[in-house]
Each structure stands twice: as C-alpha cells, then as structure tokens.
Image (cartoon, rainbow, N blue to C red):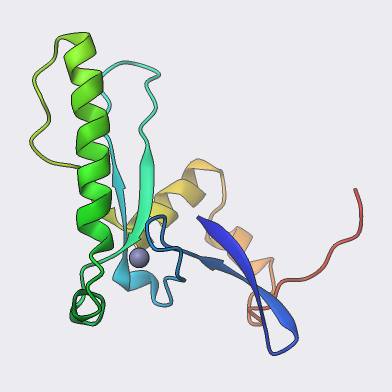
Amino acid sequence: MLKVKRTNHRSAPAFCCDICGQPIEEISLGAALYTSTSQEGEEAKVLIVHKPTAEYLLKGVDCWAKAEKELLELESLQALAAGRPEPQYVPWQELSHYLARALRNGQFDEQSFQQIDIQDAILTVAGPR
Ligand SMILES: [Zn+2]
C-alpha cells in the first residue's frame, strides 16, 4: 500500500507492507506476492510485503508467510469454485521488478523519471484540481 508519512514537519510518500503496515524502507527488501491468473482479463490480488529478513523474523513478524497463506487460501477457494487444481505456491517478484514493470505498463519510462525532480523525496503539495 502507499502511505504518506509526516516526519520532521514534511510529508513523504512511501510504500508500506500490506500485512504489518510498516514502511518498506529499502525497496530491495520488499516483494510483491500475487494470486495467479489463467483466464483472459482475470485480475490477481497483490500484496506488497517485507521479505522475511532476520530483523523481522526476530521480532516474530513474518509478513511474507502471512501474505502467502492469505493468497493461497483465496486462490484455493477460487480454484475449488472453478474446478481447477489447488495452487501449490504463490507467484512473487522482487518489489523493484514489480514496480518497474508497473511503471512501464503505465507508459512511465526513464525519460519520464528525468522530467520529475525526485531528488527531494518530500511530497509536493498540489492545489485543488
Ligand atoms: Zn511487513
């Protein structure tokens, strides 16, 4: 999920884990898990989560395992209703790869990045539309 967090009197956008709600402070430590799709036009449910790093596992938090369980249960119900075999695993991508593909699919390329001043990670406040 996306959130905006106010820190040091400034608002900044951030990706947060769909399971624990905490920011994913390093994109390389995040993942996108999703249900599989087999029918044309079918949409997958996607959960953005922390990878199971030692830091999170020591806290007793395994966001990946919780997301995997939730998605497998959802997909098992869908498979049962459609007469398909139960899923054995949940597809996933590194969060950075998932985001890059989502941006590309939204016609946002490297040139588009260069046109935006993202050096300052703070959210610019826009007026009403
Ligand atoms: Zn998490």
